[in-house]
Amino acid sequence: MDILVVEDEQEIAHLIQLYLEKEGFTVHLCHHGAQAVHMAQTVQPDVVVLDLMLPGLDGLEVCARIRQQPGEKDPYIMMVTAKGEELDRIIGLSTGADDYLVKPFSPRELVARVRALLRRSLRQGGQSPQLQSPHFQIDPQQREAVRSQPGSDPEMLSLTTLEFDLLATFVSYPGRVWTRPQLIEKLWGDDFYGDERIVDAHVARLRKKVEPDAAHPTFIKTVIGVGYKFEDEPDVV
Image (cartoon, rainbow, N blue to C red; front, side):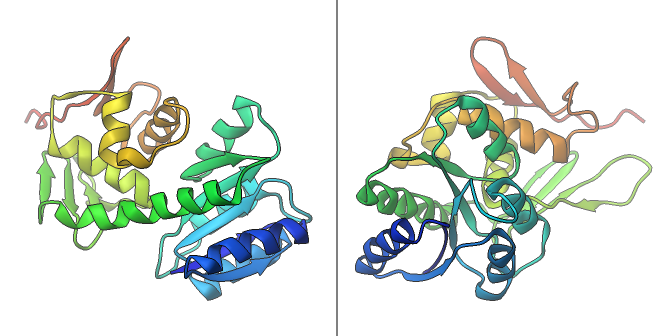
């Protein structure tokens, strides 16, 4: 597994590298934002450990550009920040990060979080071959999701790994009400370390990609005081 560590403080970067390499990972280091975007394209890492405060492009911009550029892999992105404010975490998640870690942190915790991200891929293999609803067709094996709308051609959705898994979970159980802890258990298992509200950020990001109007969701409904449910009715002819 290849890990790209983007950290401008070289002592911290080398400490992270040391702990990850002890666990058998191949680690690539860079210290500048623009360089990180280029290396993500050339290295094709499985995970990017990305500091928020970087010279040149900051971590938010780097995260957004990695998500926008095509590549053979869709890496997990762990945002690392010295800031503890909730707003910074939510902004990081909204740009495409899968998880966040606040400095100071234990290198062992970082390694555990990286392994937790990678274990998500192992759980994906048990999904059914094809998932379908009136407006969505999902192929878990090919990691492809298509949305169909009246009067337009089917659209291939550009989703991050976690967004894909979240949509596949919703489509698999239409009408089921999911609490945040249940979604966390489904997508992260026992490896989750963060705040339950991380689910809200990922749902909001998914809605922007699958809903005709994200402000008034048609498919992914909020169940006030409980969580979320997926509804997809056939179009009335």
